Image (cartoon, rainbow, N blue to C red):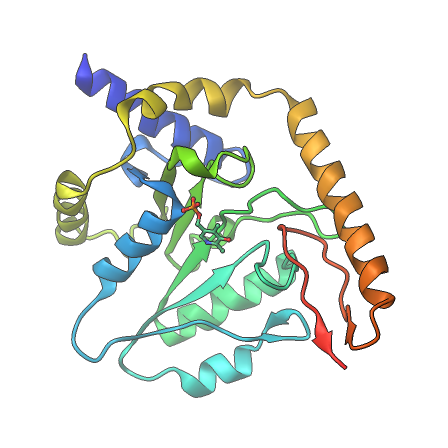
Length: 249
Ligand SMILES: *Cc1c(COP(=O)(O)O)cnc(C)c1O
């Protein structure tokens, strides 16, 4: 009974994320975490070794500065992180840009850790494309949660999902180590876990449309009001997430 329950939860997460992918994730690719925060913790613990570094690119024109990534990467670099849709810039990366990120990471032989806690919260011209779309180019651990799209940050339900259809990253040792690590981690409460399949499968579209409309309206208001404040400006109108970047004039 318990095994069935855990399996249906992981399967629900794998199915939910597979909607937007060119391949199907299996329940074995998905791990449940206590919010996206714990998924970040897992990613760091998984890669930790003496001297290792992870690149967190600064935005350059609201895209990843890939030249800077190439210049900074060294033999101790294990991964780069992207946050898409972006906090704090409110940007949403295009398909061609994500492809370039994947190709750069492949060349550098590093993973792309995709923090997609704002997944699908895009309200501008760029549709949200999950980094996992490029999982066959470069292995992508995708981190997410219910916190933002379902607006329930207190429920502490998140996921760590491996997008690696070609098994580049997935050697049995790494998977075994990950599974053992998840065995000793305290995940979210069982009450919330039991609700996840229905939450992921049966939330009505009108709920998401309403959230997107509110985000768009509030970001419009925010940018309008910022224009009226003499000492700051809004250089880029947000097209995703829940953040807006301001500039000090
Ligand atoms: C909010 C947020 C998180 C944490 O999400 P939780 O599910 O609440 O732990 C992680 N990354 C980014 C970029 C966030 O904005």
